Image 1 (cartoon, chains in turn cyan, brown):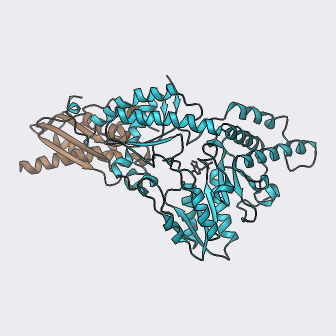
Image 2 (cartoon, chains in turn red, purple):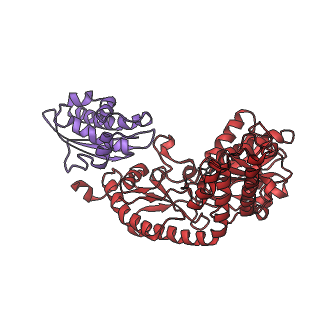
Image 3 (cartoon, chains in turn purple, yellow):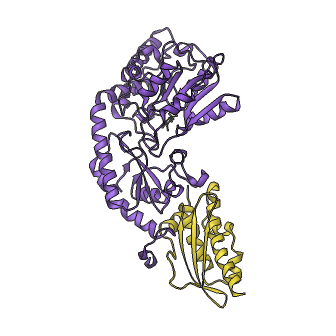
Length: 392
Length: 122
Ligand SMILES: Cc1ncc(COP(=O)(O)O)c(C=O)c1O
């Protein structure tokens, strides 16, 4: 059976060059980078090289990179670390209703401790009202947290404009760029962000490693207290192979960014147009232009996403759905719900996320396999009016 | 996540469709997740002679609907009314805990159809 992986927003495989770079650090280069002796020294220079590679991709200085264990840790560290470090200044956070749970549930947990949080609404395309954002800022606001690219819909927020607003009001600005780094240009100087989250496994580095950009002059209270690693910002012996892999992945992604964006967007558009031409009653979720190049979130009216995913899976196609009738509120993803998507359409959404390895043949296979599955499920649906259903 | 039985009934659901002139129809929508079933019955002498369904929902909902139709075809209305959600889930070799509510759809839709039918006959 063909195996086609269109769930790259969930995770990616480790790229061959990245794995190769990592391998010595499991065996011959085993030292603890904090050790003074030869074994440690041999490794510490590679950690610093990785730091430069990550910094190079987002245009910051290496000292502003803190290695973490994942994107979730980065978001927790940035938010909780800011709340703690700036508690004299205020206790108000502005974020959006469509953030990843790593931001949203962190904010909800902080609300229980007395922190005030504003969750900005989005419009039907998934975009923000920037005037509303600016008006939400008060004397007590210590952090604006707005993601760069949405993991479910791919919607890209106008980070530069938000950065200008944050600057104007002298409020710290965090952007969760886990889905954006390596896929679209991310320049922390141009964007005016103070904190930026990166995760390795979304960009062909391994799981269990990430990085947080912390602009100089924006101290954070550590989340993980421990040794002197990461200049006292994050305790814990370094995940050396992971960090070296993340550095290499960032270097490679940076060099191929233009090509990647163009190629993947063409394939995504081929999939989108092909599905819209072959299947009636479909709806694109997310702004058609302001979108990550490889993400397509689309609803197939009258059927539930899970059934479609399972049938696709049986044909070797891996995709995902934000919906699950386990999540309550009519099984809708919080992102689509915030966009005001009709609950029935929200449940019928499927996300395809393309990667560097996705080929035209993969897309054409999906275009061949998917329409009959949708028809089969529609013929089973009480909401779909088509006489052919009675003949089944 | 799903048993082989669930996957079997999900990929090849039995008795899918509608009926031209059913003796009873029951539609039931879950307020929990929006899943919806429509059940069509052919009834003779208080026995379910034929049954069809249409379901909007996840794999557990579709498989439960299909299994339910198999379990009550040829049974008396009372036997059908006695069918429980648990029995449907058990016949499918179980459902993941968070999907148990999806099996309610099948039995509840069936019971609604039968109760409406009995009400009208009175
Ligand atoms: C936008 C976004 N933020 C944060 C995360 C969490 O990253 P990690 O899996 O590395 O904890 C993800 C991954 O799903 C994501 O898509």
